[in-house]
Length: 117
Length: 114
Picture 1 (spheres, rainbow over the protein chains, first blue to last red):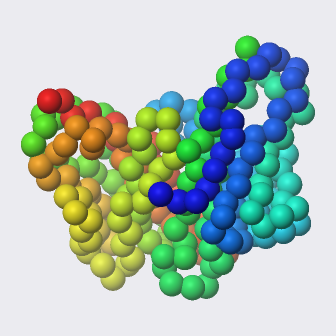
Picture 2: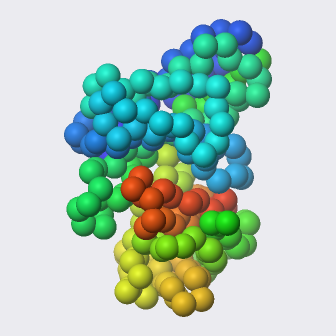
């Protein structure tokens, strides 16, 4: 099992609340990612980071923001949650590109299931 | 448009039986193809990876095949166990992006009954 952790695992909150989903990895990976996944659907990349102080938006537009102040930590924040934000959020990390194929492997955390009422 | 299509969408088999899951992709240029297993409420875990030059890869009871010419892959599970119940996701990496962009299929939901 990969050393990547997400908290909380489940979160039920009311509309308008600010939330932060935590993601940490102990593998020293440079790249980190946030995906959104709805039931029966594919994962969609919403944010990624090449390293400290690097953040980029992914393919799927998201109202969330991320930060990367430390290599091991990549939190995701929603300033004002809405019911449309209800989904599963998966964090992943991978080692620096340019190495063996195995370096492309993304290791996933267990996910946070967010429900906004 | 880069896409990954999987079939069937869901599958129910009896314990001990074999099954084969299919994946078709249009991602180009192609780097590699992985099969992930995702248990309910968990993150995906990599089962196999194949590059352009590989046409088969095994991991225990899981055997993946790749035909890079027809852009098709399959995952064969032999002697299924109850713990094989999960979603199996085909993921293709785009060699053209520095990010190593991944394209995900929607997965095949496998249920193994006793």
